[in-house]
Amino acid sequence: MRTGSEPATARSALRARLWLSLLGLVWAIAGTVAFALVGRPGWAAAFGALWLIITIDLAMILRHIRQGPHYQPGRDVPPYRPPDPRL
Image 1 (cartoon, rainbow, N blue to C red):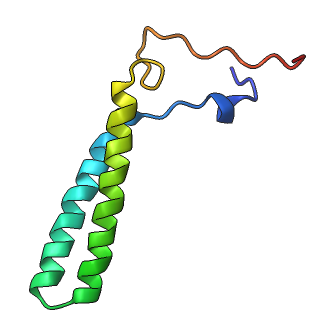
Image 2: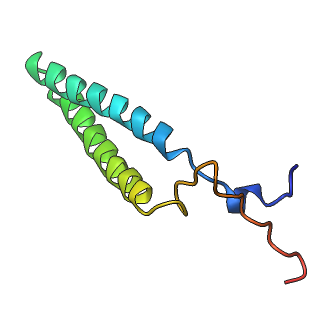
């Protein structure tokens, strides 16, 4: 049932984000190395910047996972109660 409060109470699929970020990290590292080896410093720098962004995102994802069920709810955690419109 939709309550209209979904954006405020949305939950992130952190484990899916973790695996997708790891896949992106592998591609960013491979791209950085490949472009550095073929002599394309601009592309290597772009992939290096992407590597840095993905690493920061991975750190945030792992931090949220380690914070426990509030940020990574399991099947035993009930959904958030919708906000009371009277307040």
